[in-house]
Image 1: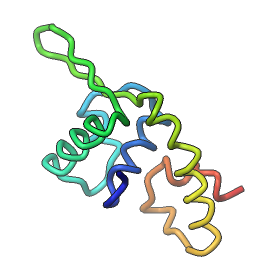
Image 2 (image 1 turned 90 degrees about the horizontal axis):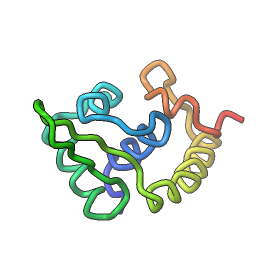
Image 3 (image 1 turned 30 degrees about the vertical axis):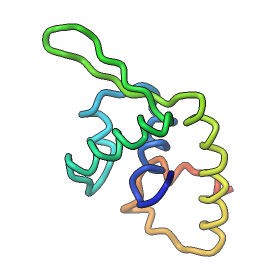
Image 4 (image 1 turned 90 degrees about the vertical axis):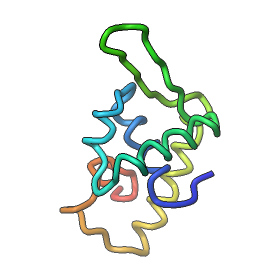
Length: 106
């Protein structure tokens, strides 16, 4: 469910920021292409980790947020960050803000 490097990052962004539109998620992510982000979002939706809410407006508005299942994985991801922080030096200058605020620094 969390193969690759982007799924856990999307979950962390939505956990920290709450409900976001596609463009806001894109701004929070670094070095991700639109195709990869779109695919990642579709896979997370299929796995019931995030939900997609589409509003019938002009222009159309679509928002993404974590499901209860998605929220339940956050402590696991934080534990992985904590473990990684004990054994790996992170370049905080280029890390996502969500990674910088992870509990591994405590």
